Image (cartoon, rainbow, N blue to C red; front, side, top):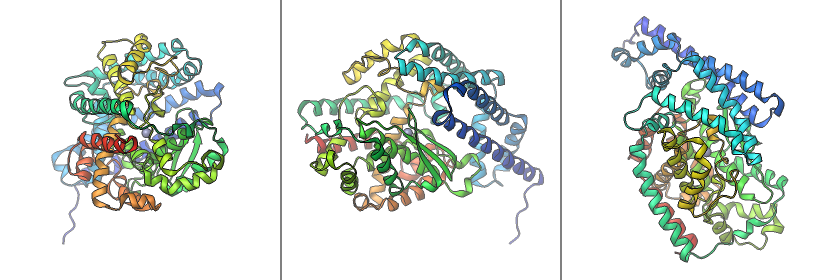
Length: 510
Ligand code: ZN
């Protein structure tokens, strides 16, 4: 058969585009490394200038992404006659760059640089504010960030709600109109379930966790489980930070962080499993996508589905602890020798309204997210102002969870997200739960022995399925395309609602 020859102009454009993509990805991977360094390694006194240096590099990447060279290449590669000649990978890359290009083109470079420096410095201000329960220390930064975000929403454009423009950055195509009913259904059922648990649920032995667990042993246990659950330590690291995160330099260098608390063994344990879910996703992306924009996950929500799936559906299952609990008892004999695996399982699934999102149980977690979602929507719409947040925060905590934090450190200052300008990010966490429950339904159909594999420590079988069906594709598909491809339907809140009701009926005997 005759080999089809590509039009030479298109061929040239494709080569230039591939080179530009590689250059941008290389710079981005270095930026990822500096982000990690700033949070994990950098001494305090050098951080402000470090932040400026990173801001400069970020601006250079931004300039490349909105350069006239990029504009011309995207135009050439997007022509209908070009589309027929390009492979699916290239089309996906064009889709990703084009979305960013069109959105960002109208942001002046100097505005973007000011914003980059602001968010880098805001991180230090937030850390200090949080450490000293001093909202006023962070407020001027937060006000400026909200101002920028309102401006960006107008620049990006939206059809119905300005917040849609920001949501789209994290979950392409998602809108308030689509999200409101999904969240409403979940909120209604979560509040009802919470009432039933608090009304006539059997109590769990949560006091197991009120003991001290030596930090050195916690570290050793976390290192022990990571490779078993599928994280490749030859292609990654585990370090410590205030706010746990996963950062990819490339698929062979994925860095996780966690936070060890002597009085709360669950914090590092489930934090590490969670971040490992993100990390394994990135380690599993096909080598074909290395050094390109496709080397990352499909979206923040899909990414979060992988961390939630591993943390909750797998890590908080009874079978997980049937496998790991004897080992945990070996590490902590004094604390756990008289605890049964069933009591331990029920204790790790204790439902209790609390102040801190990252420490929240699987059920009340989504209520923490809805509170932030409501606040962000109103902030961006100009219905409320940053200075009012401590009061609004505490009021909503009382309304949704029935508790009021005694300090801003335990309230409005607890999360890092607003300091880096991540407004629109929070809904991804609950979306992650929604996607994860829908994926669980599918994986159980395709691997009927799903829970037996967990009980037997055969995490490789589960990871292989996730790699085959989700991870390997990186950013090839949009989130909606991917969830339809994997589960056969669009995102639906029913699966999470059913999962939570079934699980807590068992844990609490209701
Ligand atoms: Zn996460």
